[in-house]
Length: 491
Image 1 (cartoon, rainbow, N blue to C red):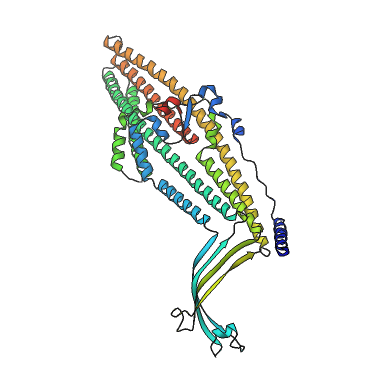
Image 2: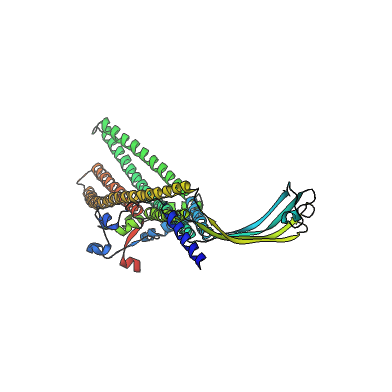
C-alpha cells in the first residue's frame, strides 16, 4: 500500500514539476459580429432590419436565382471539368484520410526482422544465458523476426487533439474548395453576361453603321447638288471608319470571352458551350434583376468561405498547441513483441529454434529535450496569433469589399433607371420623327440623325444594363451567395 502511495505522490510531483516548464501563451482577440455591425452597411441579423425581413441568404447554387437554363448548363459543365475544382476535391479527400491516420497514431504495430553476430571475449559456463547462444569460438550469427506493437496512453489528450487538428484542417479544405467554386461560378456568370452584352452591342453597331451609310449617301447627294460641304462628308466617313473599328473590336472581344469560358471548362464540351453562346443573342439574362438589400447581415461575413477557412485554420492550430503541451509531461506507453530466433547462418529463418517475446510498460521523461519542446510550443502559439491576424484582416477586407460592391450595385441600379428613362424618351422622339418624316415635316436626313441618336441612347442603356449585372455578380462574389425572398425559397 505504501509503495502505491509513493508511486502516486512521485507521479504527481513529476507532473507538477513538468507543468512549470510550460510557457505562458497569449491569444489575440478575434473580431466579433457586434464589431462588424458597426462598420458601414451591416446589421446583426436580417430580422433587425424591417425592410429586409422577407429576405433569406442562400449560399448554394446562387446562379439558379436567374432561372436561366443556359447559365445553369454552363455552370454544370465548368464545375464538372474545371481543373482547380478537381484539385480542391482531391485535397478534401487527402485531408479526410489524415483524420483516420491521426485517430490511430497512438498505436504502432509492424513486422520486424534483424540479423546480428553475437560475440564475447570472456569464457562463460554452460549455465550462462549468453553462452547458450555462442559456439565454442565465442561468436555466432543470430537472426530474429516477429511482430512488435506499442501503445501510447493518451493521458493528456495528445492524440485526441491531433485528431481534432486534422479534422479542422479537413474542414478548411472544404471552405477553400467553396471559395474556388465561388470564384469560378462568378467568373462564368460575368463572362456569359458579357458575351450576351457583346451580342447586343454588335446588333446595335450594325444598325448604327447602316444609318451612317445612309447619312453618307444623303450628304454626298447634297454636295453634288450644291447643298453641302466636303467637310460634312469627311466627318461622316470618319465616323463610319471608327464604327467599323468598334465592330472589329467587338468581334475580337467575343472570341476572347468565349476562349476564356472554354479555358475555365478545361476545353470540355466545347460544342455545347459554342451552341449556348450562339443562342445567347436571344437570352433575357440582362433583363433580370437580383435583390439588392439595404443592409447586410453580419452573419454573411462570418460565413464567407475565406473567413470560415481561417476560422478552421485557427481551431486546427489551437488543437495542435494543446497536443504539443502534452510533450512537457511524462509519456507512458506499453508494448511488446513476439517472434522467433534462429541461431547460426544455416539455421537463420529456416529452423527457428526458440520463441522470443517481451511485454511491459515504458515511461519517457522529456528532461533533456525540454528546449526543443519549448521552441515548438512557442512557435505554435505564435502561429495561432498569426492566423488570428489573418482572420481579422480577412474580416476587414470583407467589410471594405462588401461596402464597395454594395454601394456600386446601388448606384448602378440608379443609373440604369435614369438611362432607361432617357432611352424611352429618345424612343418617343424617334417615333415622333418617323411620323413627322412620313407627313413631310422633316427631311430624311433629320430622321436618320434622330434614329442615330436613339441607337446611341439604346447602347448606353445596354452598357449600363451589363454594368448593373456585373456589379450584382461582384456583390455575390463578395457575399458568398445571394439574397432571395422567402417566397422564392419556398418555391
